Image (cartoon, rainbow, N blue to C red; front, side, top):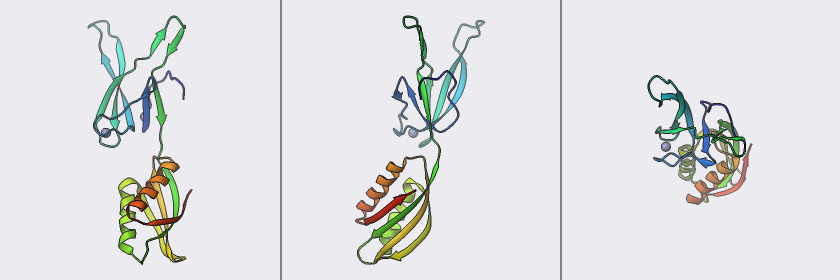
Length: 170
Ligand SMILES: [Zn+2]
């Protein structure tokens, strides 16, 4: 998205100010819902209202305040928009994993699922023995891209010394 001349929308999003991402200073995450607030920063009587924003971190709930430093560049006869918003929406994925845990070891599979639950919102649809391993079918909703989900799953498995034979995400 290029520069914008409209207020930020009250949607889960990543926000940049002159291409610098807005980052939560408490948890370092970057997903916020911004709210417009109006403040009267001028002398009394002039009544000039400035738009400012309070963005709520969607990870820890802390508020981040910022203004809109967009400005008019007279030399270039151009308005320089400062704020950019990249909207995020929760997407649903269907995931199929074929994994090997060595000897039948349901504890490991439970820990694996719990590990994924810590990161994503997950529903286990099916868990069955398959070709000497275990096939897991999951429904997952996340703001993350497919690639991020894939690597989170692989890292979780690796930590538990689980071998993933097949992993499909749709
Ligand atoms: Zn935060």
